[in-house]
Image (cartoon, rainbow, N blue to C red):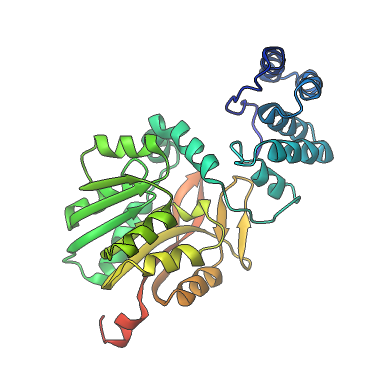
Length: 319
């Protein structure tokens, strides 16, 4: 989904090209997209490796209904920036070009959430009516029992700590991990966590497994909307679950098969994809229920609330 806002600026290293870029963005902000596109086209001729300008040109051409031109510009932005700082690969997928379900780069996700950390809680709670942690708490309670007591919990993609706040009264030892340093700093300021780490989630889980760490609950609230394929992370979670532990998470619901990158640049997952990923990871699905964890423009977004546990726990007769 393209907006009139400019991408985060990364200099071309050429002062003239940088000035032209800012001039183009000023035109776009005033609604003169044709002039902005023309100036940006001249800018990338001057600085062919200027990823920010290519990305802005793609967004403006998309705004103008020029799909072919947008694809060409987003492709150039992708090629100029292997770390995909701006998320050009996602826009190419949205336009039906390139990979259909590209994984989001660490650089893109980190930049996205560092950018939104200062107003994240206000946006989620007041504008988007976010209620994922509360829905997950009720789901875990329904499986584990009303007198919930969790020895150790890992909050994957903890963000500013909204999930940690919901579960903290029931947890003896609370660990949080997030890719974005600004989000981790906001979570630390709340004083909720016994331990916080800044890391990519699967990498962190594998390091925890190597150290033989075990958690009685692994939580991921509104995290996997930024992941396409779920098996890798489900398998990594399974490697750190205590024998009687639970894995609880939310996703946006896809009514068709598989996985889909939506216009919002968030992934939606089908029930079948979720069940299959858990099953392949050796996890048994205990709860998979439809629920709206948030709203978008005042409209509830269809989602799934999921609770799973190790399959061998079921075989051993645990409830």
